[in-house]
Image 1: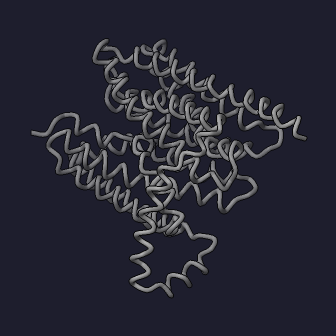
Image 2: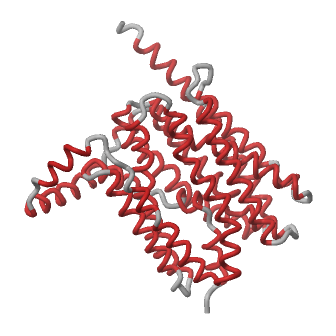
Image 3: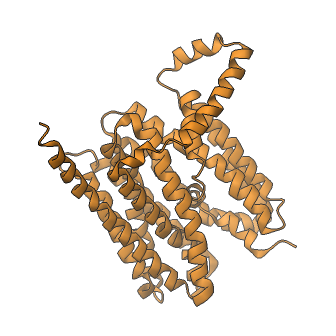
Length: 385
């Protein structure tokens, strides 16, 4: 017999799937250096789609840990990092604009997939819904093919001249490079990078709660499952608008991207902690969902841009891979268990939202340490000058 929880898989938005499946990003970072982001993106898309398709045969939750959790997660991890790195490679100017446009697709997906999943389940059942959604994911192969590297011509010439034996040697070398890259933690010697990772970790722990439990809390308050799904849709569309907002203003000289980044986390934490006040009024819940989505959209658009301002472009690929591994990878694993435990103990989603809001506020406050560290570094360098 199929457990009821399996039905929840089709209700997971693209952002939830993405940020709960980030651990393979350090591997993707090393592979992108040896191969091309286009190749890794296409392979990741196929793996993610295959994991989704296999999930339709699951009869127990532990099977979903393998198919949806590991396979789909690993595929999305391989897909995610190349798409971010390509933008930074192509755009030296107007990076906020380019990044805002590039990542607004997840907002559209969050808006569309919540009602779409409900509709597909009603018409085709959860198995049919998973099969259709796996086909939708597979379209990412065509889009990954557009990740044309800047050094494409030189790479193609080298590949043409490569023999079978040299390919095997390169594969072995790549394996060793992957292990070496994953064990290279020199960036953690930079206190500013450490603070950034702490911020990302705390954000991931707090971020998961609204994305996961917002529809379920609405249903527990007496609203229909479709009304709960529309809360996620509103979150998604405002998330997209937040990314577009960053695209328009993020590169202006009058805008301090660091403080915009930090303030958005702070606001999202405050409104999440107080969201229980809107339980009895549906339009207020919609307002909270929209505001939260808008703040998160700004944050996600700026996270790699802010990191690049803290470390060099040469270290961005490695640094971003490590940051999202520590933050979204480990943080999401902690968040799902921790917040689920809170609900099991209290049988009240409001407590999970309250804790989530507090963690998001702590994430924002941790970023305040970075300007202090910058001033300390500047004072330390003054005598040498």
